Image (cartoon, rainbow, N blue to C red):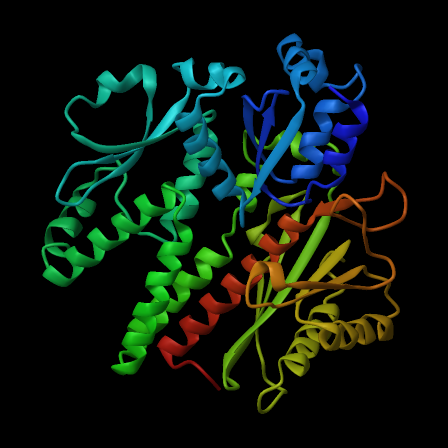
Length: 421
C-alpha cells in the first residue's frame, strides 16, 4: 500500500453520505461500508495506531491490504444503509463475512398477504414467523434499532401495516381496505416501498412526477398535492433519528453539537393561511416540547422574508425561552440579512445559517453569519477552534426539513378547519 496514493484518494473523497469500497492491489473487493460523511469515515481507518478503529486486529489486517478506495454517494443516510446491505448481499466481500454470517443481524420482511405487513425479522428467529408467509426479505442490517428507525421513517412516506394487531386496526383494514380504490393504493405503496428497499428511489420519483402531472391535468388537485408531498418527502428524507441512532455513532463521536438549535420555516399558498414554525433540538435530540407555531398576522400579501422577520421578532420577545446556540432558517441571503438585522437590534449575537433551496439537495446553498463557517471536512462550526460546537451538513438539512414538515402540518390543520381570523 502506497501511503501517498492512499492520501490522494482520501483527499478526493466527498463529505457526504454514501457507501465506500476497499479493494486490494488486484482489484478484489475487500470490504463495503456505509458513512454519514465519506471523507471523515474512510479517513478514520488510517488514523494513528492509538486510534479507536485501528485497535481491532481484523481491521488492521484489512487496512494493510487496501490499495484502492471507491465510493458511491447517496442522497440520504437511509439510502446508504440500504445500498450497503444490498451490495454486501450481492458481492459478499471477505471482510464483511461477519455481517453476512452472524445470525444476530436482522432483515426487513414483507409478508405474502392480501394487505402485506412489513416487519423486522432476526435470522436466528425465523421459526417464530412460521405462520406468516414471507414474500420478500431485505438486508441483512447490522442493528435492529437502526432497521426499526429506518422503517419508522419510511412509514411516513409509504403507509403500511406492521405486526401490531389490535381489534380496531384489524377492523380498519377489513373495512377501509376492502374498498377497491384503497386496496389499489395500498398495493401501490407496498410496491414503492419494495422499490425503495431495492435502491430504486429515482424510479419512484419519476413515476410520481408523471402521476402528479396527469392528476393536475385532470384537475384532481388534492391527489396531485398528495403525489407532490410524497416527492418532497423522498427528496428530503428526514433521517436525523437514523443519524443519531445505533450503528452511526462512530461518525458523531468527534462532534460537539450545539446545545440548543432552533430552525424556522414559513408555509402559505399565495399568501393565504400563512404560518411559521419553530422546531428545537436540544443536546442533539428532537425536543418537541419546545416546538412553537406562529400565525402570520402583520404581513399582507406574499413575502416569505417579511413573514420570517415577523416570526423571529415575536420569538425574541420571549425572554423566558432559552436562547439558541444556533438558528437555522429556510432561505437565501435576503432572509439571512433580514433575520440578522432583528438579532442585532435585540443586542444579541446568535450564530445564524440559512439554506437556499435548489431543484435538488445538490443545488442547495448555505449562507452564514461571520460566527459560523464550513470547514474542509464538511462540518459547520460555530467558531474557529476544533473544539467549537459543530454539525454535519446532512444533519442541518434534516433539521431544516423537520421545520418545513412542522410548518406544513400547521398550515394544513388551519386550512382544513377554516380557522383564520
